[in-house]
Length: 100
Length: 243
Image (cartoon, rainbow over all chains, first blue to last red; front, side, top):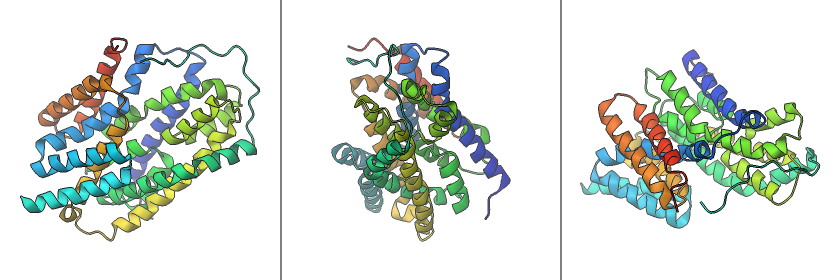
């Protein structure tokens, strides 16, 4: 089994911080109370992180990526099917790149 | 927001149990969700292989971290030399939502022994948490439900990670088939699944804008953190201003 030590330590670190978040809410509740404003901010974390991950690639990439991205979004909203949206997105970008 | 979750603790809580019946109920209810988790894990398996993770490393991540969105996010950073600090901080930031989710489970799990409470917390994912909260809202009080749900989700996620890694080994040049776009496509779908209404426009817009600017200004993947922070701050800032 090839696992390099650096990779192992990084994954372990990821696991530790993740467990801290999972147990943290239960642990904290008996002790402090989050303000509604902080709660609202926390609710935006996943969306803000997700869009930050894709926005630079979509807006600095080519037309093929942008068009495929819009199509993927449309499929995702219509079908709520992650796998289908991904497959259509991949096919679309492949197709659009041939056109260029 | 019209409906607010109550902050007040119930004065009297029904007796909470944690036993096999709850576990079995959790297993049963999670099976359909398990299929979509499996499909999602398959994608993670393929993409993790493309990012350079060996099969055992990917499995280690799926079992030790066991958090889909964070695992997908760090794949984008998995470029040698590995930015250890960015990877771990990004994982923490993305998973901060768990703090909120755990807090919502508190009225239930405060009645369970600390050992069970903190062991079961390991299995709290978005999906299992949502199903468990549904159970709680329906008046059921068997906290073993989360354990049962978590077991199904954990097996689905880890077995599909292996399957995806094996599948990915067959595909040689991902960009040739547009597979390099799979990651972006998945996150577009995940992002739109989070849409709750016009109130999201400003925080998401700010996040995207900051991410684009920072990606031009700074090397590496700091733009993910910068955009994530900016969007969340904007979300907190606009809280209470929405109609």
